[in-house]
Amino acid sequence: MNESNERSSKEPVTVTLYWNHICILHNFEKAYLANLQERLRSEGIHLVVRFFGLGYDEHMAAYLARDGAQMPDLIVSADLEVFECAKVFDALGPLHDCATWLPLKSTAVVQAVKRTDQLLPVVAIPLVLYGGSPIPNDPLPTLVRNARVAFGGIDNSAGKILVKSVWERYGKAVAEELLQRCTVTAMPIGAFKAARTKEADFALVPSLYALRADGTDSFFEASHEGPVLLPSYFCARTSVEESVARRVCRELLSEELLDFYAANGDLVVCPQQSLEHASTQDDADACLTVSQSFIDALDSRTFYELYRQHIPSAEVIG
Image (cartoon, rainbow, N blue to C red; front, side, top):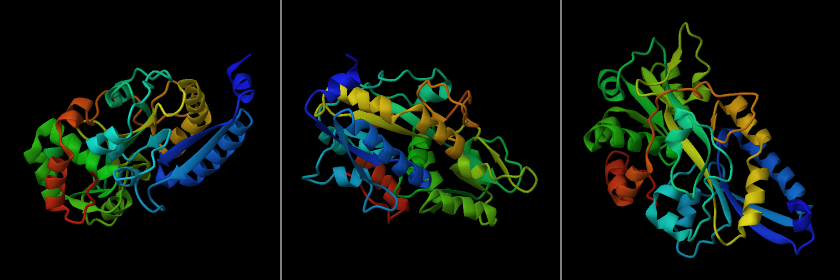
């Protein structure tokens, strides 16, 4: 008897999934998850999905940081504070070691976003430079000192991952200089618009936006360090049986979903799938992102002390 038949012969099981993923592709995500719920129901798995992020009441990390928050069984999130804020991550309780549930690509980009055994990388959003003139191959600290640079995502992970990545690579003082000198917009689209209207010379934006460059009046390039990577992760709490969690994981992170992300969002897919499409940054031999050791060493209060010193309106998690 195969796994799906065995499951359907047992009592139905309810699995709760919290989802805070790719907002600009969310209409597809909702339709995809609705179809997945129907497929799993025939196997005796009742998948309950709760959405967080843009267009919803709050980000997932903000909710999970609350006293009395209801914990899910499974998470897919690009809201990295879920995994980087110790208070939130600890509140999730015991997690399955799911990092090997799907084979991962061996590329430099994918290897760079691997973290603990409890987190399975799903995709990475590459942040690259977009601007109205050929982009110099300068390290980010030099570029920020010599040009007007914008980036966005004050209360989502796009802004925070950039600051943390620069902090790890170049030190706290350079991260502070980044915040002092750059124009920081609420969302990445704001930074993109600032570069398009010449209010900024260059913007660090998701590569999806940068693909609009025409090579004549506007350009895009990965930074000197390589693309800045904003990864997303899947994790599974031990509140759900491992066999069930593995089954949902395989169905959830299917080739259909991952290929859609690569084709429509220019996202780097982490699982080793036979995909028709690939990101423009899939084969980058260098990149800028945050390591698990840095996250372990960086107290959230220390990060927000620096971050809110220059962006007083930023929401504090934890």
